[in-house]
Image (cartoon, rainbow, N blue to C red; front, side, top):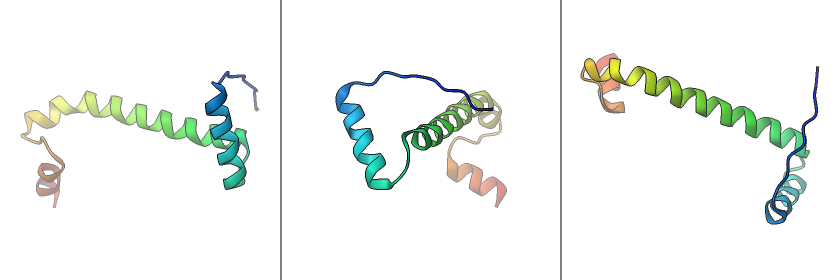
Length: 72
């Protein structure tokens, strides 16, 4: 089931949005759905990373290189 929401944007941002959707050939709704999915994914990822960092650090894993060495 789909539901509608309304948002307000500064006029400059709405103009940018309209130019982008016209150039890319996507609807505003499609753009906002995709942008929101990406935003929520990133926020969840960051929250999970913050939660797991103490466990990784306890194992001496601080950087991407540390992870790569440990699991390669």
